[in-house]
Length: 301
Image (cartoon, rainbow, N blue to C red):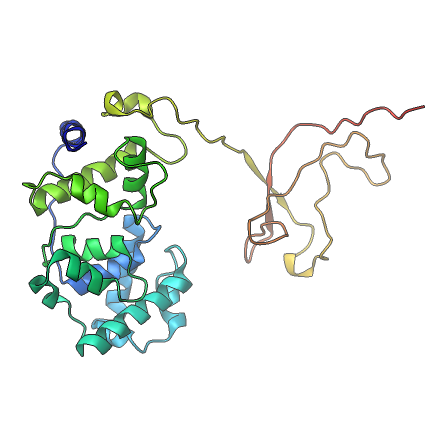
């Protein structure tokens, strides 16, 4: 398996070239950025980090800040309410344990011990801990496995398809050659992440242009997810004022007309609510477009 990983890494390096230059900031900075980046694009997480830094020049000021203010500042990230709470709880736990916001002492610990210490902080999992160790000035040997890295590793057959994201960290790190230093591990992380972003996407992987398609056992076996055409229908009155049992009128419906052959459209429902997915502060409701007509069997005589 390590030999296959080396071949994959070499093919990706030939296709994508060298990675950008890395900066190694204070580990607390990386901790904040890693907590913001969960299920969020890098550019969005970086922008949220910059906004927080401008509002709180010292992270100590964030400890007792109003959670609503923090949530508003990071509002473009995924789950900003949860992240605001987790971020403050993690920094408070670090301050309570060390008396100040610093993580440089982890450089004197082993990788396993440093990882275990970081994971005691609220909201810190194996990916966040590995990011702090690898991308900060601590410069410890670790491999963050993001969502895209995890998906790509499963499709390439490097780990079991049943392996979760947390369980994938140890086997993927153990698979790296022992002579790879932190720079090589960072390059490998960037190459696999670039592969997942440009080719091995979640819904519609572009296997035909993939630089490692000859090494991928999943090539051509991933069925693309269907694309739904979305149309938006204006509500006849504000969402706040509509009755609970209100339903959008079907296309072609005429008051008093028979509904035996009416073209029906069904609203898209979310997994957590039983009502249509209505945009907040808007007058639009989203429907899946369908042109199929409901045909009823003839009545028996």
